[in-house]
Length: 365
Picture 1 (cartoon, rainbow, N blue to C red):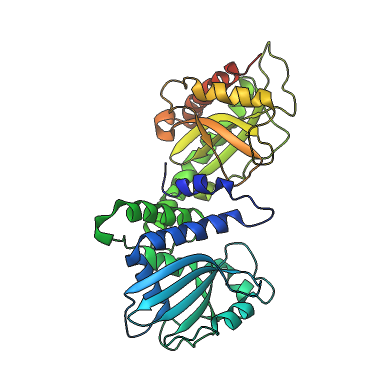
Picture 2 (cartoon, one colour):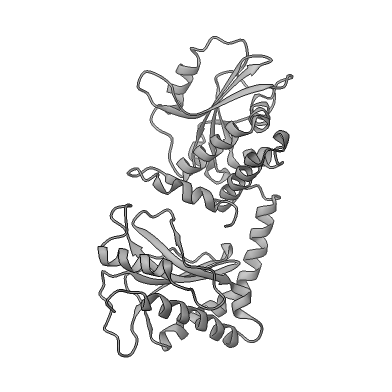
């Protein structure tokens, strides 16, 4: 799996009403990384304190109650040595600031009688600066005022986190460090000079060449007997991110027409890979439903994939209504060389084989 994908798997259970699930996953995973890596916890605390001494022991907590039934702050950095200091961070991706949220935090953190600084920061993407324009920018130096709420960015935090932690050579922090940075990069939170942003720019450049192949293949799949669905639930194309997705239903000679409620055949390109398979409905984020679809999914996971493809695998993304079972191959390995039509023909051969393979596992077909 690519850096950042494991967090999607870990967080698939966090489906609570209208909450921003990506925000919850990222904050929880960041907290886990900082708890696992004392070096990174001290580094981030030092970055946010901007004082003339270095933290030596920082305890990180996630979802810390502020008291008085007024909620929880997302991240707490409790610096214990060589001096006591406290940093509270409220993290945002797409969510808005709650009513009196920062004022409540300031009132709560004011009650801590400590000899060091008490910092209060709202962390959000730089693109959302105007949404929080009542806040001053965090000055990043010793002019920061105690208890003053400041605005800071995920991109700035990414830069701080970027150098890999050492932590005595422990493997855990290194693995989780790559996952957290990967997940931040997937959500556009890496700074422009970062490795992941350079890769994304190269991907976008490649997408210019691939887009005509994708469009030709979409039409060619219809020509060989697959019908695009009118119930369009797919994620929108994002060529600048190297992503395209399409949905189809069965419409092959000798087969009955697909019912509108049955699983959808789907394929997507997420550079550098292409995947084909089935999108199943779930019971409100729970098991695959109905039972006939669950049996189909079980059979598909046990089946052999098309030649050259990775085994069938189950994927969970941000939409709890669905689960995907797909097989994948490297896109360049599928396309080969030649004209747009030649590459599209090879892509269709892989997708058609994937769809036929998936349909063949459907019980009672």
